Image 1 (cartoon, rainbow, N blue to C red):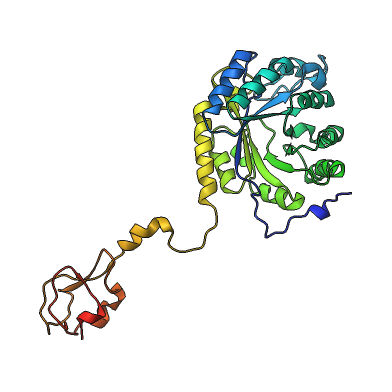
Image 2: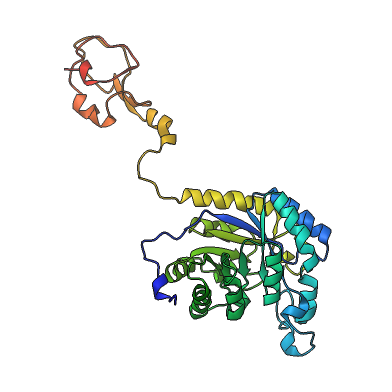
Length: 354
């Protein structure tokens, strides 16, 4: 049996264990239109994202049609206050018959497409579509039978950790590893708040997740803007997931905290730049700095001089470029004599003085 202890990560191990991957979350931003969903996939393909993610459920597989208060979003919720879960999910869900055309289009555009199943029937359906990996949504982290069902497919699992304790993450990870000890798991740090404020994120907790559970770690971003995602890339996220929309001003359930296509393209560019910039390298001049090294200051003869003239600050100075003695040698040279005639703009060397 796989235990948490056997999957501990040493403190020396780097956080990023995979190449950075950017995933665009379609979610409810199709606004009830397959044509819009396909347009969003096409637009996303031009931004440089690596994959598109869907959510696979129906209102009846995820909740009950009920007017009881327990089946409603709390009234003070910023986006969905007072709405029944059934009505919200009826609006937000991606009909199962849309999956195949979305999968086909994404794949034809060179994008992977995968999904979050919310019950076991969704897993069976996604298997019929040949999905290559699965995402477990934050709230489903406690649905251990669902996690076991997904793990039994042998395919990689992306596990979102919003609203979770470390103990709950551990139970989910161990459940998957008990079914398949070699399963590929990526844990996504997440704040399950819509929208999430940057001060609620705690990006440093990515390192805790990676070390404690010996897993690749990423970030599922519900903040407004791209700054937090870029910071996550700099801190070592292997994956960044961001909701995407064609129109931030639309009335869709997720639009207000989703990135526009333009923002998504900027996120892809900026996140990869941040990830590249923090890579460790040996300290010292980089090969790209060759010209800067050539232009470093050194000592140059600044006036025509005769043999026997004294070296002074009037005829030898520290100037760009390199080629002469280091500037630190000037004080030692002052008062010595030139050993031959020297023309202006000659690099100063030991052979020129005595």
